[in-house]
Image (cartoon, rainbow, N blue to C red; front, side, top):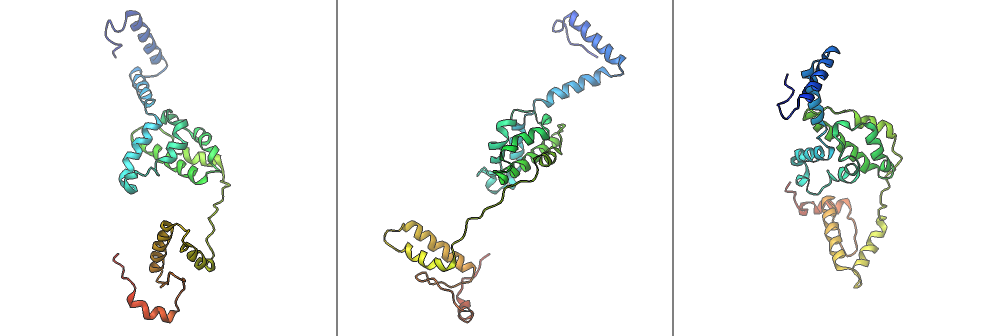
Length: 224
């Protein structure tokens, strides 16, 4: 095996390298395989998570709505993972790194944290496909360490249906915003059409089944 060309490698350096190789042989190791392993280890440390994440995103863009231009797929990583782990070699990332990164938002922003964990798992799979030695179970182990999320989803309460006519009439007042009024008109008509409900927008009422049957031929036909 070569130790490097002279004068790039001095005689003293060559003697030291040769002695290290002989020591490996005495310990039952193949110096050539060890040199290759050290080279691969050095190469592995050049693959940072931020680069793998961007590459994984590029590979998945075609499957995302609008090629992912809205940023919804990448933003959980960009906002909550990469600021802390972006400059870490992906092969060094383990469940402890992931737990410590997501713990601050695990309960308060449960949905975002779950998405970030799932996206990070995809990044690790992408790194494995590139031939890097990563722990594909790291995200599952991190989830076990983080525990059950305490966050409960709180839905925005809907307006009681009996209050809808009065609310709609208030939009017709001169002081109301005409833009909002027009937008709600459009949404209301679209919803009632899909639900097969005829509606008089001035007083908002539902028709009986018999009336609906008579009006059925006049409903717009779907073009889907």
